[in-house]
Amino acid sequence: NFGNQKYDLGIFDHFSKSYSKNFFLKKFLRDELYRGQINLWKHFNNKKKFKDLDLPKFGNLHGAIIENNFINFGAPVNQIYAKIIKNYLESKKKNIIAELGAGYGRLPYYYLKNEDNCCFIDFDLPEVLVLAAYYLIKSFPKKKYFLYGDESFSKDLISNYDLIFLP
Image (cartoon, rainbow, N blue to C red; front, side, top):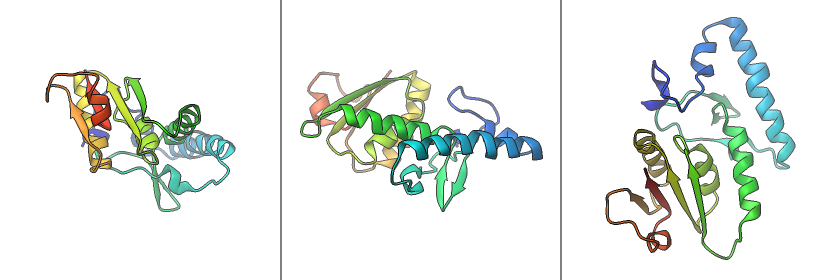
């Protein structure tokens, strides 16, 4: 239930929860924050299918439903970044992507959603790493994952795993 905590865990913008209780703040949230991100996303995407932004709600996340797709704050920008990263990588070899502080894994989710030949390495604080591991393993149950401490880390792990979580 990490997406619906009373207290800030340091990995979320709690606009959705706190702003949705006030009429004026809710309107600001919808018209300025969400619509602004959606407009930016539309600018970068020709297809403009909201299905591309759809996120699993594992962790009881806050967000909005747009055309039957769950989208939370920051999702459009992370989807744009994932698309930009993909443009810089080779498609014929296994790419390795490492992120320092991936939070619960929104950016890797969007990258891995349409990519099978990749190893994503998440370096983060142990408490946050647990959330990312939970979210991404639940989102991609068929991907092979390595959790710190399962065995000794070596460079060979990169060729054997799709997701690697290291503190």
